[in-house]
Amino acid sequence: GGGTKDQWLSASNIPQDQWGYAEWLVQRESGWNPNSRNRSSGAYGLAQCLNKPSNSLCYSNNPVDQLNWMHGYVMGRYGSWEKAVQHSKSRGWY
Image 1 (cartoon, rainbow, N blue to C red):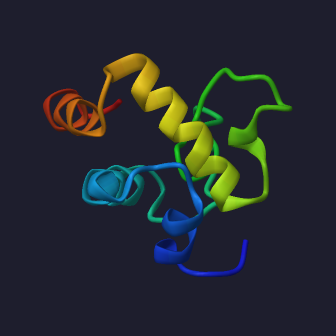
Image 2 (tube, helix red, strand yellow):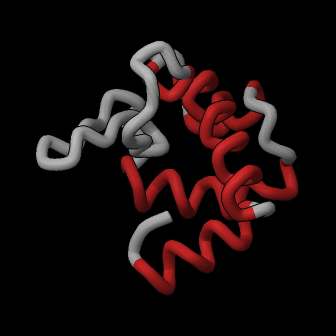
């Protein structure tokens, strides 16, 4: 998990014009700690994913894998990073 968030974003499949939204959401969820774990819910990683198979990229030790998983999740559920951030701001979760 070495490197910086800018290096991780650059290596991920998140389009650069979406990085501001991704930065906001990841900061809110995990503070950019790829090993972050919520003890009460079991949420893990940069994305604080829940209820996914343990072999999911979300549970990878590689922060770029976690960001790639998060990008797929965000696009599949919300259609855009902006909408995911709006949802998080209005409901407190994404």
